[in-house]
Length: 462
Image (tube, rainbow, N blue to C red; front, side, top):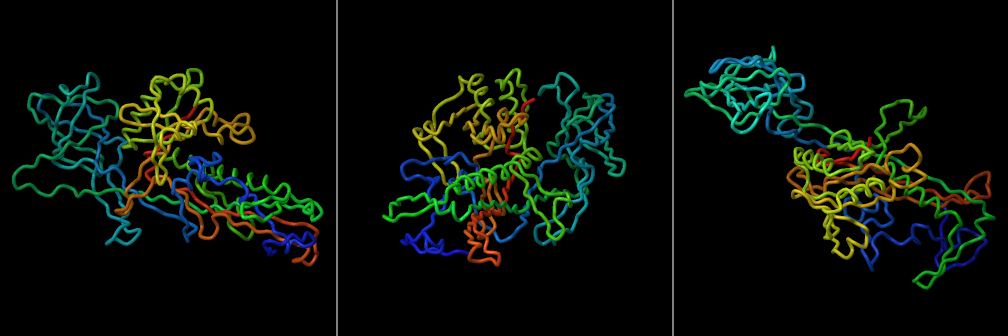
């Protein structure tokens, strides 16, 4: 690897030239004169600015999330006469019939299991809605009397003798509102709670720029605020920008490798699972039709879905240009100016407006929309056939509890020492063939993590 002597202007040898990388000449994301919330519009810059990055030692990250705590039954029944017992059949869509739980916390060793917790439990009080005309006055409360985990059935009788359990021909959700136990009652089936395992891989991204030593001699000289002069190789900046843009694309869109053919003969290839695939797999998705645009009804439906998933109260929305304009037109009456706070970033109203954010507040939820440049790039995500100008990603602007500590929902992890690694190589001095070129190498190892992805959302066009 070549070395450089600051302050020297000898042009005959690379080792004595005072070279400067494009990464040192481009305005940083955090400008002392104005907080550039998205810097040069890159996702990774936004994460850096908001303090949502850190270096880790592992190349594989695993985390665990509790499933929903409250049990809910999904079942069918033929119903019964007033005051009589009805038999229910647990539907295949029910959260579980009997649950095998992996216990990942002490005192259980990793991978051990505990089986128990039938969906319905003896003496549960359930609340049944009729097939039609459901309101608070037509709901039937009933008590579970027997359960048969093997057959996937249970029986229940109404609390009020004059009530009758209605027929439910299609699988219906039945909430459990508590228990009703007789004197000297026996233990019910034990409760069991599901812990879901999630993981992601470290992704290694590399680029190379090569230029002949003759071309390298045609140098761009840059005057620095430190009073010194530096040279920059023509074309190096373009490779650096392409490297950063592709790292962003991978952070958002890459999928974890499951194909052995991706790897070469001797070394395995590890790819990360991007933010969008993680949200599509576990988050809330809201579809809309291009012909109608993103309407008030679509927005209400999205808020309802986010609410059911216990979503955050404030979101950062990265929108494709067409979707952004559709929201501007159809939801114009709901926009307002404001301020945003997320992670370590806090911006007042002036900065909020100058950075082209639009804030929409509705039903206690706040959405900060941004016309996201990467979704509108003609060379990548706005290429013919790509959908991203019509779609958008909603990231929760809140934290999640992880092991008693608060963590942010979306975080970008880098392998220690490889957040951004750059090197200049002079093969003329360092290789046997003495090739007359200069090589500029770039490398980054990273993985995005989306915790509690159910709080995030993605808008799909159809």
